[in-house]
Image 1 (cartoon, one colour):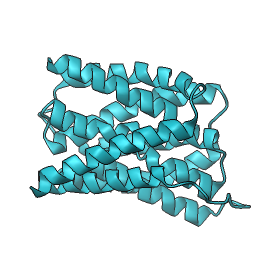
Image 2 (cartoon, rainbow, N blue to C red; image 1 turned 90 degrees about the vertical axis):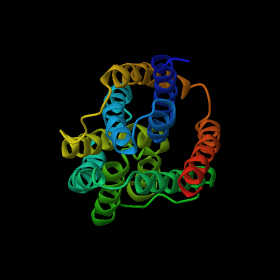
Image 3 (spheres, one colour; image 1 turned 135 degrees about the horizontal axis):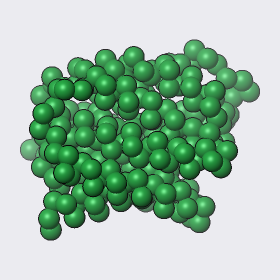
Image 4 (cartoon, rainbow, N blue to C red; image 1 turned 30 degrees about the horizontal axis):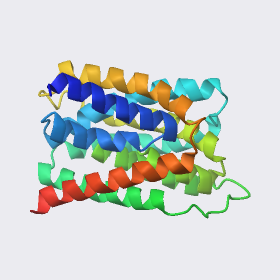
Length: 247
């Protein structure tokens, strides 16, 4: 199968997940770029940020149109994550490939376990700005370091810390992802000359189209079912990447 077809298929799957779950799909972008399209880990994390930014902005528009974005809460999270995302993005470009791959595998595995656990957290009576800012800063650091949107962390944080309903948390997470990804991408500008735009462009285009379909899918299939399916896929990917580093 040609690299272009692989890029289109992978992009469509990732966009579908991002549109339906408000995050998570971007976690698959890095391993897809590394193992399917032969990107280096550093180039893959940078390319992933480009793809995630374009796809998240598209999905954000769709959710905002339906009134599912809490702009104030999202802005608090996003602003807190800008500096950590920028600094982490700058540092990640100088790390060995094995360190980036291993760290990514661990975070992906933890994200999968988190998705499989029942969400029993009670929503707070009031928003705690310091706690929300701390969660936003941590999310920004993960985005900048690993080149992922971090929606798998943002959605539960927006529910438990800010008190948003799930559908609104999904939409709001896309605002946070977009801002953090742009900040991390700014830190990496000019540091990766081996980006293959002939693959990144189609990958991003397919992801954008998939995000629109994912938004429609979310209205037909329960979020719990989608999340569990994705979590098992993510767990398998994380195990494969970790074994690739250790063995």
